[in-house]
Length: 102
Image (cartoon, rainbow, N blue to C red; front, side, top):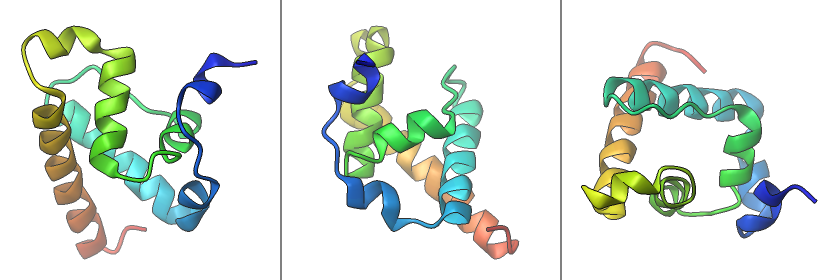
């Protein structure tokens, strides 16, 4: 079985709560935030779906960093990075919503 799908807690309702355009907007906002912050992260929809099994967005980002970019934790705390990413992602979502993108 694919290790990626067994490593995180699955909350089926969390992944299905957002409709597809909202999920795509959230994913685009995360990827824009990563790029702006100079992080070499790039999520695709399967990764985002997997991470949506973790209800709290900040915990979701921290888990991703811990699992796939643990080297960053030598310089930064996961909580700091996840807050920074969350804040930047939220800025992008607000801008997209203001521009009528969904």
